[in-house]
Amino acid sequence: MNTGDETQLFHRHPGNPIITAASLPYPANAVFNAGVGRVGDDTILLLRVEDLRGISHLQVARSADGESGWRFDPAPLLAPALDRHPEEVWGCEDPRLTWLPELDEWAIAYTAYSRRGPLVSLAMSTDFTEVRRLGPIMPPEDKDASLFPRRFDGRWAMIHRPSPLRGNAHMWMSYSPDLRHWGDHSLLLEARDGAWWDAGKIGLGPPPLETREGWLVCYHGVHTTAAGPIYRLGLALLDLEDPRVVLRRTDEWIFGPTAPYERVGDVNMVVFPTGWAHDPATDQLSLYYGAGDSVVALATARLDEVLDCVMAAPEPQHRQRANGDAS
Ligand code: BMA
Image (tube, rainbow, N blue to C red; front, side, top):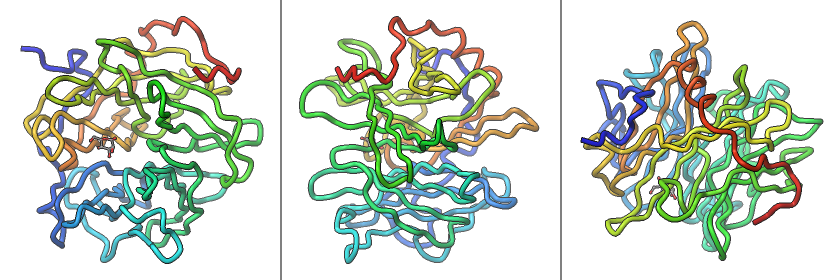
């Protein structure tokens, strides 16, 4: 049988799914696509919770081992604030968390679902008990965004995924001097075409992870079938000093929906990671992902092996720089 993840890099946690709607202290339809961070001795998940209207908010859960014993904060951290943020009318979704040492703060890049479509919003937090919104930083339609943890030549950098009216939806890079004004947009990674597993639409998974080989990127690719889309994962590696330069990209997907909770849910055949955590002491890389748009699951790998895998991938034929190539 095709297991859907032949490389066997990542191993599913035996307790999967680690969080379901039934785990929450209040009624909800689904809990999935969570941002991940370490705060004090805890792993925190910023969960996307879809309520019984269909509107999502972001709720904090904390755990000492990052696997079990989740404690839920008393109120959502980010729920639509329609008085000042009408763009959140249909929800706050899919957060990616980046610790910015220079500012001593977390950046939360999330999707605000506006009447004109999803857009990228940014908020800041020190410990996930309170939050300060910077507001929309990309107009619709745009999502799957995350900041890099440090500046490049004085500018902050962000990966995101606009959906153009014409053609495929690719991953882009943008820069900002102050986290509010974004520009110098350039194409980073293209969706492939035709029968490929990542044809038509790709998007960033967890925030880029700094490693000795380069910025490690995990992205989702969408393959459209007669039965609906299949969301699978691939890897890429970006240059440490100029992350617009793509050093490697796997041809084959490295993880796909094979477990029952990934194959069947509100949306079938979806694995959708939005956070990971690396423990330097054990080299364990913990990947947190939404499964079937219904539950939160965990899979682990050794970062060394993940790097071996992406380093063995071919160099892209045309290394891309910010050269205005907006195909
Ligand atoms: C994407 C996003 C995610 C969702 C995924 C699979 O476009 O909307 O929130 O998990 O589709 O349905």
